[in-house]
Structure formats: structure tokens, C-alpha cells
Image 1 (cartoon, rainbow, N blue to C red):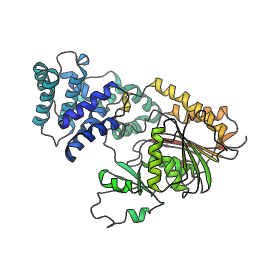
Image 2: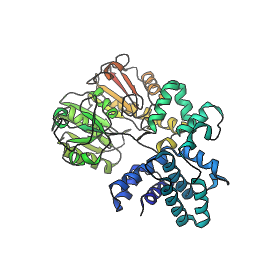
Image 3: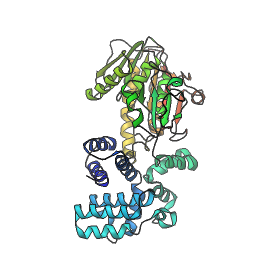
Image 4: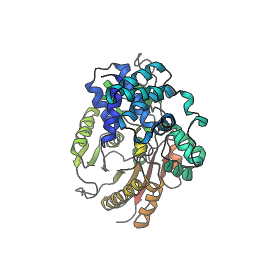
Length: 445
């Protein structure tokens, strides 16, 4: 199977079901015989087409002489793969992109469609996405949505809440290939030792982060051995901020609701110096097996993984700390989850807000008096974050916002000083995803 055909198969599978792009891509790559460079290209093609779909469709649709929206899905994806290379990948010769697309079209749809693909792609170049060459849209947001390849309703939503400058920055960040974040396991090493110059002569370039136990890199493969040895965990630094805000001391009892895949549970274990108790809850036992396995690699023994519904689970004793990393739209991680922007909708936000409220209410009943509840999401939508907290406090007068910054370093600690909350927008700090966290305190039973 060629690189481009593998990318096509991934895109076709994603059209049919609910699997994540990363999961499907990993499964097909594992079964392929592609070399390292071809695997990287397949990954780039899949993620690039998913991110740039709206822009690509606007360019292709303008050149198609029949109704593009009625075109077979497989032919659309062949055209998208070809157009993405011609517009966004200057290292790929144009003739190669066209020739491979024509071959795929011939194989899947016959000679007539192969000729159509050839005719369309030969008229596409990087200049095709210049504003004057894109189809005219109604209103400013329509043009911005097509140019940035985001749903128009989401662009309008962000403009309303964040203004032009921040929205433009987030749209641009979402379309870049994200760096991989790693967390250094302080139970086994230190950031100073692991990142010391000369510690590994062939190590690829890394970007140290604040918090200091995190770093970012464009190269994942080099660090796989360190992951297996329990020195590292894959985690974007934004995801770690909620744990630092929670900051349970050693010997604490912590309940981590919605714990899978386990990045936050294991970070809490490291922050607690592997002393105390962490109860990690998730509905799916298979996900918890991965959590338990990686905790073992990290040398963490205080995590008890329990398969249960977080809306009804009852611990044996009330914990002093609860972390609720709630199911959300994931609008803060659209760069990393390339297909997610096409699945989010106003209806989904409303649906998830109801689930988040239910989880918060149950968490409130489980926490001991004077205990700390940290609510977090990887969303930047106010309905899932600030508005969710306002509604919760109205229902629960026994809770208040806790302005403690926990173990957060600057500049993040200052963000929590007013009301104990912290919103990080995508790309606000280099390589950081978007996310939200709120620290709350229970003042009465």
C-alpha cells in the first residue's frame, strides 16, 4: 500500500464511524511496511486534510464543472489529498502529487474520474488559497471560516467572546502541526538531569517549558524508550496546569473522576511523591488497564483504578481533593485533534454542559468539608467553563471560589489570583493547548 493510499483509507474509515484519527492512523501504520519518512508523510496528509478540509473543498469546488457536494466521498478525499500537497507541501513535486492522485482515482473510480482529477489538480497551486482566489462568501466571518478552515458558527462564537486578534491567533494555531509535550517523572529523575546538555548527544531539539517538568519537541520517536522506562509521560503542559492548581500534598486522599487516559492521575501521584491515595475512576476498564500499566512504569503505587460511572460512584471515605476533568467539546485542542472541529456543534455544547453539571453536582456531594474541588476541561467555550462554574455556585452555596494558586508557577499563578480560575487559549503560550481550570472550596457540609 502506498503512502497516499494509506492516508486515503484512514480518511475513508473516519467518514464511516466515531473512531479517532490518531487511533485509525496508528492501526494502519502498524500493519504497513512504510518507512519512517513515508509514515511521516501519511500522518501529515491525514491531519492536513482534516484540518484544511473547508479550504480545500472551496478551492476544489470552484474548479469542478459538476456539483462537487454530490461527488463520491472517496473521490473527494483523493482530490483533497492531492490539493493539500499542491497548496501546502512545497517539498512534494507537483507532478508527483497529481500523478499519485490520478492513479488512486483510476483504481477506485475508473478512467473517467481519473481524467477529472487530473483536470482539477493541474489548476491548483499555493496561490489558490489567496483571498482573491477563494470563492466569495457572505459576510466577514464566512470568508474567515473558509480561509482558516473552521466552522463559521465557531468563528462567530470566538469573535463574540474573544475578539478579532485572539480569534485570528487561535485559528492560525489550530492549523499548525502541534509539538508533542512530555512530562518528566520527578520520582525517577529531575528536569535538570534529563535535559542537561550532553546527557544524550543525539537528542533532538527540545523546548523547556514553565512548569519546569515539561518540555516540547517535534520528534516523538526518540523519546519512546524513555517512556517505556518510566522517565516520561506524553502530556501537553496545559493538561498539567489543573494538577498543579489542585496541588494535593503527600498523604492526601484524591478522587480523580473521569481519569482515563491517566495523565492527570499519574501527575498527581508524582506531585504527591507517591504517598497517599488516588482513586482513579473511569467507565471503561480497558482504558484503566493502560493507566495502571503506565503508572507501574512510572513507579507509582498509590493509584487504585476503578471502573465505574463518575455520576454515581461512592468512595468508602470522603476525599480531601477531587479533580473533575470533565468530558467536553475539546475546542482547546483542535490542532491536536484535527477532525474535532467538524464534530463540535452548539447542540453538542449544550448536551455536554448538562453532563458536566451532573458530574459537578455529584462531585460536590462526595467532597469532605474544607476540601478542594478542581474542575477542568480542554475546552475554551464559556458555556463549558465560566458559565458552568457560575451555575454550579448558584446551586451550591456551600462552595466558593478558592483563589489559591496551588503549585502553579508564574505567569499562571497570577491568573488565579482574582477568582481561582485559569483559562489558557490555544497558542497563548508557545506549544500550549487551550484549557480551563477552576479551584473551588467546600465551606460547609
